[in-house]
Length: 550
Image (tube, rainbow, N blue to C red):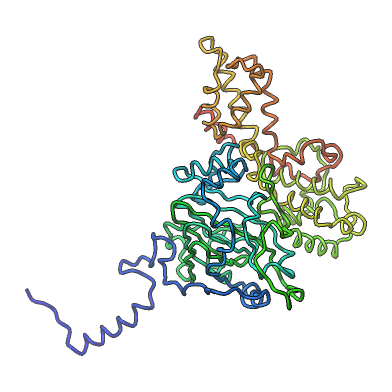
């Protein structure tokens, strides 16, 4: 065989040129971008670990070096001052806190599904979680119940000045091995303290947001559509240019995540337990009261946290910052002295709807009922008016009705209306399913019971069908008991028919349950405009699929 050989000089030159070109390309030898189809972080090398501090900064240092610059930092060992880090074994938590209710998600956010708990979809008891989290696809992502806050220590630099007055809420994170988040950003500043297990983080500055495929939630929070397990650089080629830093957290560490700083988290260990404290997006601070005083760790229960949760009622996790809400309202009132229904709707729900003609003509309130997001927004807007419109004229006078009412409690109520998340309550299941699904199910049950061969249906037979359409056992049992009030152990066609409308009414609207009962706006406040044309269309394909499944 005869081999083709380059002259020595030519070969050296070619090798030199190749060595220059290789570092400049982000493609593999096959022409595929580096890291394509691989887990997040393989598209390029990390720019390094975020700063690690072994001593805690002063409040001013924390502001100057990290918060104001939106720069993440790891406080090594800072969580070890929290009693909960030593106390919160599964056995201890079962005994002390087992009956408390928590919000749950699946281990992988990208699936977008909420699992079933003892209290329904997305709602569980801490007892059930602690007994099943090692083998079940469940992850506690919940506002922390008040009884646990006594055993969580707030870092000293947050206990004075503006920082102490702007602690919004605290969240509990608990799961087993394999919990994973999407690439996302949060609206508020956060400090995440790890009590058990380890976490690895990919951190991406907001300066590179323009290179991410972003799905906005309508506020400051958002997520990227990239799969962290399988990064598609053919579909999203700009992501190859995104630099990142990383974080390796061990038990006892606390991580500061700046507001709007993109991140993705993987949790490891048979038990992964963390607590986060959320703070306002601050533009400026007054830390003068911090000067000359000895700062120490302080129990979270002793802080004046804005949103708290008793462990039994409805959560307010993720509600809008009331301090920022006040700023928005004041700014709106500086431009418009009298706020119409349309002006408030545009400001807080659909700023993209520029044409006021869409919502100018009055329509019957009942016509606006339904499941679509805009219908819910309309009803939420009416709830705002129910609080502020004291004279019932469908206009808000800034000087008389709005600005004098902006106490922190009123702002919290308004924030809960504007940013209400149904998954924070046991009503989520009713909201998610809606009247269309439950009506199809009930009609199916009636048809089954109309057959002379099967005139009765047991509870287990009903639950099998209810869970088949996405319901939970606890709520299904509630419905069955409504139809079998005498506890005969079965239901008949007549029993179902007599309770049919009562059952369906539970799923009506999918609106905030606390704001849809006995409210004066239901009869008195009109919804302007022809928005009804944009909302309320039935999803016939979905209805047919449910019928086919049954």
